Length: 339
Image 1 (cartoon, rainbow, N blue to C red):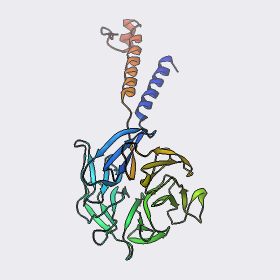
Image 2 (image 1 turned 45 degrees about the vertical axis):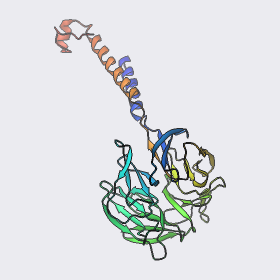
Image 3 (image 1 turned 60 degrees about the vertical axis):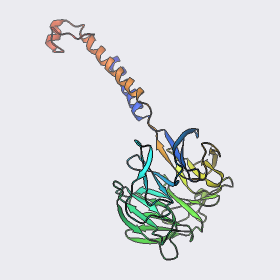
Image 4 (image 1 turned 180 degrees about the horizontal axis):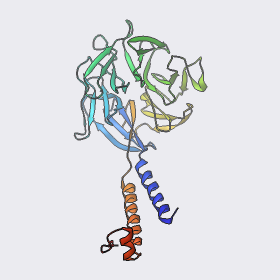
């Protein structure tokens, strides 16, 4: 490869590195009792308050397929979408019977939005489904008689729903119009998360995180098929929800101690990622990672270098004779480039 070719390849690699440098993500955590959403960077350092209000506080939070942040609220009759221009959450969904919504999730082949219903304000509907693009109500899925306080929900790519019912301690699966009992881990289960390993992670209102295969088989620590307990840590107090970063590290809220704890993919404790008091977080409930694009300066610099190399190559071509330039038709003989 010529020297110019080598330099050209290096600059192209520099540009690609600049374009691809978008892997960094911040963690947004809902402070249910503090009425805010607090932002932390990938090291756990406080970035600042993403949103706060003296009104009704959010509970659930999720990143939509459009890149916007959505929240649920136990006191509102709709799901809200963050408006970056207004710097506030505005109503997104219409219709349905939303009351006391906890977890929300996008998923399925159409990226629809699903909202659980913990009841408490009338007959529970269990799960409401809304069009992901417009927020229009589509359908409601009810749990069997005797259940009906759905706290957690997860949705797989095919559109199957996994629903946790807190009073009965049951997990249901809804697929192809059929609602089936998947597992019964016991009372006081909470948020559901589909992990990068294809397993279902279950938050609880105690010190544990449970794990199941999607067929309902227990898949606890070290792959145990008899006990679904994946994490059991006395440092956790109300381990309501779970999140994963791009390296598959596991984050668990400890709502009663106002912390977020971090674990390895094997469930081993790493550190207290968000300590109590950092950012004024009170009773963290749900959380989500949001991408943070790197500055475009590196990419722009690479493009500038590429242009300079190209110009130098053209200028070098000007060293041949004018007759040769005319014969080769590199550019008009009377119009050499200005270098």
